Image (tube, rainbow, N blue to C red; front, side, top):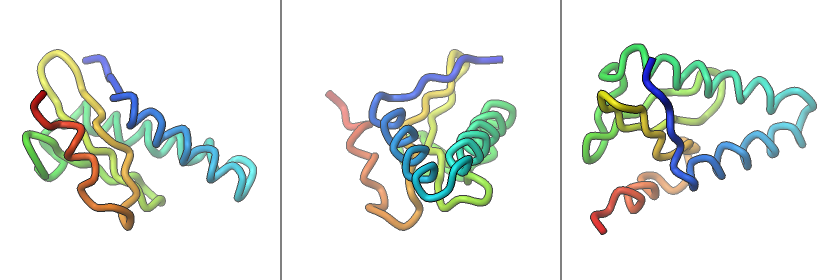
Length: 100
């Protein structure tokens, strides 16, 4: 199995969403975490299954939550670019892929 690496902003988004859900209902953050883990596992198992969105990135829906895991798969790793809410700032994460 290839390793998974989260960009720091994607990790921050994940943590913020977990905290948000836990504040709303105890245990909901853990359910969200497991749903994200399942989305990442699907992306690892079938890296081309998610629809292509931008510069070789794809997205995988997070079941039962309005989130998408935006990722870029290679032979060496699965790079998680964003854990993006589906109704907020669409495409904001594209700046994370800008050439430097």
